[in-house]
Length: 406
Image (cartoon, rainbow, N blue to C red):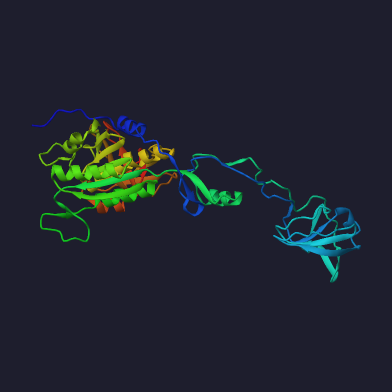
């Protein structure tokens, strides 16, 4: 007998999951390992950058007044190079050869660029045109000053921020800890890739796809293998996730109501508080969400496409929210490429290819076969075409919404 259980609207389900995102502490990592991480504490400059007046060009450090007489000779009394400043005296009528990035002598007020200088002999030059005071000199702290917040907390660190952090002299950074996501595939029909599959078995794929998604989203995947359709074995794998202090346990398969769908039963026996387990979406109606001690639990459907679509809609934003990132759906407008019939009570995510449209928006054409066990079309798809619950029939050329897959 089928249980009459109402379906939770997709938007409400996502809101509940995102609201339950775990609060993660900070950890210190080497600068070389910080790319892609979220800064936990603001990075404050401990010195000025640059810390001294420096030259922006190769040439000669001079007094602008000494170059007014273009034909007058200037005596070269030394050289200032990057990392090796000139420490001697520069009297009136003298100059110092200088390279880009080198400290400017205190007596100089401008840089006569190399192109505007003529070498008379080994220690004399003339200016071909007067130099302008203040030209080609970088003043101290034009980039940042001591005490400036150069990178605010919550920033996702990319190559630019990594370079900026290095410029402050930071060898390590305080970043938000990556959430540990334990992933447990379930079912006697599954064998791991590389093993010999029996006549009635298939290779487990959903767990590997979800693990890759977790890593790309900023989490740390902790694969727990495949649990047999046995309550005691399931409990042992659940305990392994607890022992590993996982922030999130993701199960794949066994969350429906069949006699062999034991995951929900095992989790409840372990003490899980169930929030919901059926959502008005397709694919992915039997999705379970709950809490086991401090560990969030999400049970995904067993069909690989259903598991991946649900992971995109729930696990990816949950990780984003725990890291302080934007957890919005991120859908965007497109143009429908074919006629579609009216939709039912569940939001439908159709695998679709995109082509260029005449008005700049992409044209989304769904694949004919949308079976949730077909992985090849998910790999070939560019996006998921979103059909809202109870949407009326739509015609080719109508506006629609898509969720990019990559």
